[in-house]
Structure formats: structure tokens, C-alpha cells
Length: 98
Image (cartoon, rainbow, N blue to C red; front, top):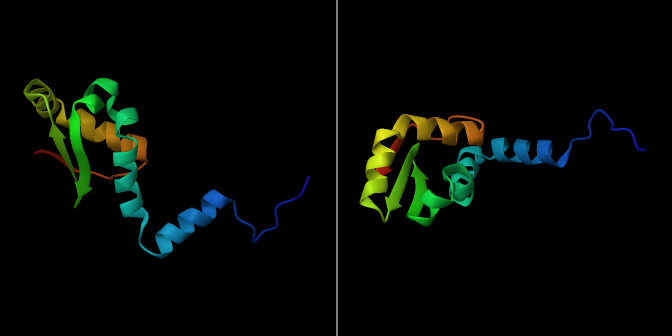
């Protein structure tokens, strides 16, 4: 088995360094939320989500169900916390329903 030299990095470490060096980490996390939306929100919510994106730390959601919109408004803080926990940092501060 090969030993890791002190200047060797794992692929994850190298990618993290690259993202931080080029100030892309925040954009990467924002894109990750869209890609992993079903995993974060659950299948029922994801199926009723028409659009999801992040801009300036706000999660914009377009939903097909008025009832779901009301539920999201009532549990906004919980969903913000869930998204941020899943992404490993503060990715969003607010949710906007469109």
C-alpha cells in the first residue's frame, strides 16, 4: 500500500481547494441544492416543484400546489435549516415562493 506524502492531497481536498481559490464554492453549493432537491425535500415536494434555484442566499421555489406553498411558508425556518445542514454550511438565508 502506498503511503501518502505530505504534499499529496485527496481528490476531494484538491477540488475544495480549487473551488475556494477561484471563489466558486458558493456557486457550487447553490447548484448542489438544485441537483439534490428531491433528496433534501422528499419526493412529494420535489414532484410538485416546478423550479428551484438560489440567488443571493435566497432559495427561490416555484411550486404547483397552493397547499404546498402554504406548508412551506409555515415551515420556512425548518426548511432553511434542513438545506443548510445538508449542504454543510449557510447556503441560504431565506425562501421566496414564486
